[in-house]
Image (cartoon, rainbow, N blue to C red; front, side):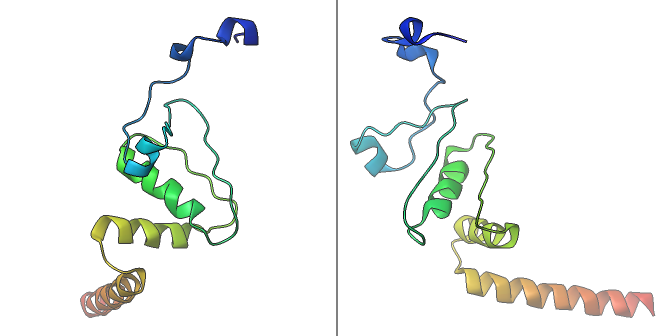
Amino acid sequence: MRTLVRSVGRASIGGEPLPSCFKSFESSKIVMRRSEVSMFAGAPGVGKSTLALALALKTNVPTLYISADTNAHTMAMRLASMISGKIKQMLKRNLILMLDGLKQSYKKVAI
């Protein structure tokens, strides 16, 4: 553990910068660093969870993601939407249809 006096003026002590993935972050000089905790705060519904998920996806580094108010299903649908470029509702409908098809196939095989 380093003391405040030993840490001042030594930026290299922090984790290495993660790849920048948003132009607005670059222009505002916002840098996310490896091995550091970052917390996004704001009003409900402004996109904090979606921003954190997008950063985790776009930086392509192992990430611990914790959300106190968003369940795993919602986050999985958001992630699937980000990866595929499809609207969440369309993804959910297609997944339900696919699962129904798998269930029907399983019933035929089981009989």
